[in-house]
Image (cartoon, rainbow, N blue to C red; front, side, top):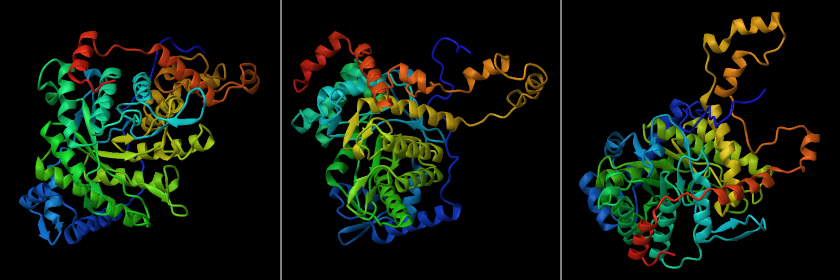
Length: 489
């Protein structure tokens, strides 16, 4: 049966999650109460002077060198938080909304190595890699937004790195993007660059299409001064933020999962209280990312049952509080595109989606427990995410889809459903058809060269990089930006 011509996506990004609830209502309350107790009785350490003043003015209490955050202040921050907000793309058609029960998969990471397309070995990540990753994902329909996935190790200097990273995102995609600012002093120049691309000073602040990834809390239970400075700079420039807590089990957070979730929740609430004290309601993704270490070795582990469960539980907690949720998935420990890669990515991404994570980070391209990034991985993960969205869409039950008359006609007639109007309609409406996964029989597969998924994905990645070269900046725009910022390469 031939499929109709043209691209069809029966389960696009933004499907509803929340079907998987690993925590009971009583367990949610117990974790939340413990998190509030940690903030009220233990509080936060190493609070920068400016933030300390803002927190005390908002109702926090000083106790020696720590700042205690009373329960009432936590609840005021939760109540006052923006519950839904847009992530703008430079192309308005690519905007997405964060919050509620909608799920979007995107990217993240700060890999310092790249799995080379030619040698299939790891090497240092470069600025050209970042440009290529940005172009590649721009053509992948199931990746809703792009955060720089690798660090350009060939660009020395803090400002140089931040400017070149931002320019790569600006020039090579119109999806919503995110980046990290190494220092607060980088924020204003990046905003000026975005204003130049938009053609008017202040245009970026009116419609900010870059989100900042910041980790203002250092586990356990203290603030990081440099990151807090970045928070102030982003708020001053109206940049939405993902405030990321990335505690690690048995190292910077408790090994028992319940205690881990309580501390991690407390720390992410501390970020929310910080934002509330500075500018109530400023758009913040509540990015509570529980990370796991292998307690036998102390190495970070991005794949496995524990990280799958913890991030799903974190999404459930954040959504239960009504906050825009951010979690992480697909952080496989695998170095190659192999069975371990597929198992860990599929398991963690599906659980995060089913739990209703509004933004699921790291979900495409990452390998080697976030140390590496892979072009082939982006292609394969895009297809995997399409299957996850299809699971989230679920089964629509109606008189039409139950189709009693169609069943009766097939049973009493030709004895099959091939060629029926019902099957033709369902073919386009209900089914996702993979491009990378091989569904042929063994003989056909062997006759075609017996390619594995890694090989097929490498071919597809090369095709996209060769063909997808969009011009998102005019020659005049690029020239003026490069003249203004000689740091750009």
